[in-house]
Length: 565
Image (tube, rainbow, N blue to C red; front, side):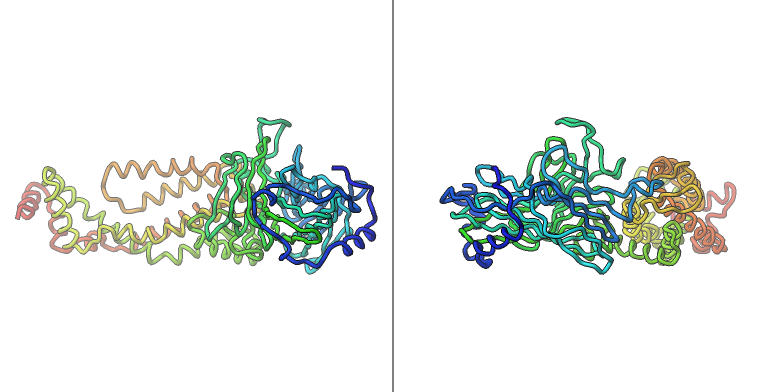
């Protein structure tokens, strides 16, 4: 299409007010109707008579500055051109490398663009030059402001986009209105999207080019996620192919990497969502509505857009379910309070490394009763092992009899064979929850600890903490009561080596937690071993103790005689 010569905002406003009637959705017919003559038929006009167009003469930029971000809008498509986060850097040592949430696509629309599409294709709102109503904004933490963009085609379809901002939030409100000021009914699909600005960024132009992620390495682009009916639906970046549309409206749809996310939350006037991968490999998310408008009628859609870090408090302030983008998994119910505790400690010590140590100590104190019960049970089992080995030798050809005798031995000595495992099982959910929390916590990103550890979200550059973790794990196993099974002993001796290799490239904050936990466990086991004055007597009754203390052939014959009885 070719817009008519631009008119002033004042003239356009008078024309719009004269032509448009008050908002009345009763004049809308066949919403989401894809039958002939409705949305699928595309924009249709009863007459070719033109109405005054609203369009700007040239591209202009509008900037919004808050304590949290700096956003730069362009009137070309009334979209975002740049969105930088004030408190987060791409490079830790470069104070001018604020995280940029938008990487311009090589082709296509910019983020927060909107389009109206019919059977004949899009009307071109994505590249149109909107008239800007508003100016640059500088907001304090308590400040609020808004910017409006307006454009009308020669056929009379007007689009008004209004963005509202709060200085204390990463979320902005988007209001999208379309008004049919033409002379005939029209139908089509209204879409509002976060175009492929976040996520994999092409190294070279063209289809099939290699891609790299917004955040490099293992913490790069993750893909899209939708929250529908109380459940999350994930779309891993590598598995998205083409376009996938939903016939339902999600509570929100998001695109994310490990530490940052963009989420669109529909408020009203929207029917469904879509996830699309472009030919250059980048992902676009968005919402859409089907609409058919009679002359003089309008349609309005509203949404909230969150653009920022995966911080628990910031996400909760917008929608508590947005915390699912952090990726805490099935242990999220436990991991969220642990992250809250971590932030609580950091308020006072202002060092996340020290906060991890305090949190680990607190968890260890809570589970001391369980650890003590497990240690005592394993100690008793260890002292019974010689008797169990004797029974295995005696009944090696009769498995059923062997199991019966072992259970009798446990019962006589008041030993629960599962007593050493159950207390440990209670601690496993907390352990994995904290593991997941520390693995992707943005709080640890670029957070220093001491000396050479300047980023708790990155691996230890000198591998000191992984090696220390391996040593402490080895010492812990040396102090742990054994069952006497040679095969199990070999496996356990190999574990420190395997875990050291596994943890070499994991975040140093996570390795710090594991190392401190090992040290605390060593101290607890040492205390338990010292406090057991007579472990043998504690494990066996006096008469059984006498049997184990027999020496030489007489003692052996006596034990065999007693066992045969």
